[in-house]
Image 1: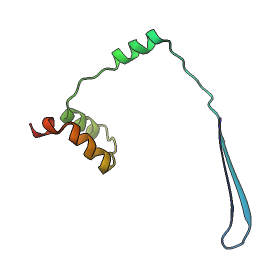
Image 2 (image 1 turned 90 degrees about the vertical axis):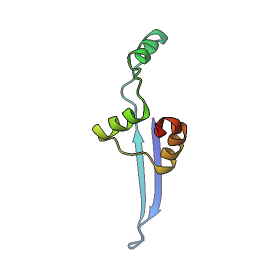
Image 3 (image 1 turned 180 degrees about the vertical axis):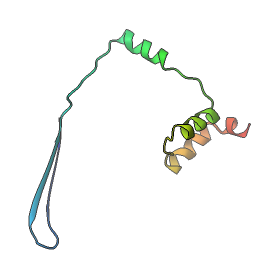
Length: 82
Protein backbone atom coordinates (compact mmCIF):
# COMPACT_ATOMS: atom_id res chain seq x y z
CA UNK A 1 0.00 0.00 0.00
CA UNK A 2 1.15 3.51 -0.74
CA UNK A 3 -0.39 6.69 0.61
CA UNK A 4 0.17 10.37 -0.19
CA UNK A 5 -1.47 13.33 1.52
CA UNK A 6 -1.38 16.96 0.45
CA UNK A 7 -2.87 19.85 2.43
CA UNK A 8 -3.10 23.31 0.95
CA UNK A 9 -5.07 26.50 0.62
CA UNK A 10 -6.84 27.68 -2.53
CA UNK A 11 -5.22 30.86 -3.74
CA UNK A 12 -8.38 32.83 -4.63
CA UNK A 13 -11.05 31.63 -2.21
CA UNK A 14 -8.68 30.97 0.72
CA UNK A 15 -10.39 27.62 1.24
CA UNK A 16 -8.29 24.85 2.76
CA UNK A 17 -8.19 21.52 0.93
CA UNK A 18 -6.95 18.02 1.67
CA UNK A 19 -6.05 15.52 -1.06
CA UNK A 20 -5.35 11.95 -0.09
CA UNK A 21 -4.27 9.31 -2.59
CA UNK A 22 -4.01 5.63 -1.70
CA UNK A 23 -2.88 2.84 -3.98
CA UNK A 24 -2.97 -0.88 -3.30
CA UNK A 25 -1.20 -3.73 -5.06
CA UNK A 26 -3.88 -6.17 -6.16
CA UNK A 27 -1.92 -8.74 -8.12
CA UNK A 28 1.35 -10.44 -7.31
CA UNK A 29 3.40 -12.91 -9.31
CA UNK A 30 6.07 -14.99 -7.67
CA UNK A 31 8.59 -17.13 -9.49
CA UNK A 32 11.16 -19.45 -8.03
CA UNK A 33 14.87 -19.23 -8.84
CA UNK A 34 14.70 -21.87 -11.58
CA UNK A 35 11.78 -20.14 -13.35
CA UNK A 36 13.56 -16.77 -13.05
CA UNK A 37 16.74 -18.12 -14.66
CA UNK A 38 14.70 -19.67 -17.48
CA UNK A 39 12.83 -16.39 -18.08
CA UNK A 40 16.14 -14.50 -18.29
CA UNK A 41 17.51 -17.05 -20.74
CA UNK A 42 14.37 -16.91 -22.90
CA UNK A 43 14.44 -13.09 -23.04
CA UNK A 44 18.14 -12.69 -23.80
CA UNK A 45 18.63 -10.67 -26.96
CA UNK A 46 21.97 -9.86 -28.54
CA UNK A 47 21.89 -6.55 -30.43
CA UNK A 48 24.48 -3.95 -31.19
CA UNK A 49 23.80 -0.28 -30.47
CA UNK A 50 22.64 0.50 -34.03
CA UNK A 51 20.13 -2.36 -33.92
CA UNK A 52 18.85 -1.15 -30.55
CA UNK A 53 18.35 2.38 -31.89
CA UNK A 54 16.51 1.04 -34.93
CA UNK A 55 14.33 -1.07 -32.62
CA UNK A 56 13.51 2.08 -30.61
CA UNK A 57 12.48 3.95 -33.77
CA UNK A 58 10.43 1.06 -35.14
CA UNK A 59 8.56 0.60 -31.86
CA UNK A 60 8.14 4.33 -31.16
CA UNK A 61 10.01 4.15 -27.85
CA UNK A 62 10.53 7.72 -26.53
CA UNK A 63 14.12 8.96 -26.43
CA UNK A 64 16.12 9.04 -23.22
CA UNK A 65 17.04 12.25 -21.47
CA UNK A 66 20.08 13.83 -23.20
CA UNK A 67 22.39 13.43 -20.18
CA UNK A 68 21.57 9.72 -19.90
CA UNK A 69 21.95 9.20 -23.66
CA UNK A 70 25.36 10.88 -23.50
CA UNK A 71 26.55 8.40 -20.87
CA UNK A 72 25.29 5.45 -22.93
CA UNK A 73 27.04 6.83 -26.02
CA UNK A 74 30.28 6.91 -24.05
CA UNK A 75 29.88 3.22 -23.24
CA UNK A 76 29.37 2.33 -26.90
CA UNK A 77 31.80 4.88 -28.34
CA UNK A 78 33.90 2.31 -30.28
CA UNK A 79 30.81 0.66 -31.73
CA UNK A 80 29.32 4.00 -32.85
CA UNK A 81 32.48 4.98 -34.75
CA UNK A 82 32.31 1.88 -36.97
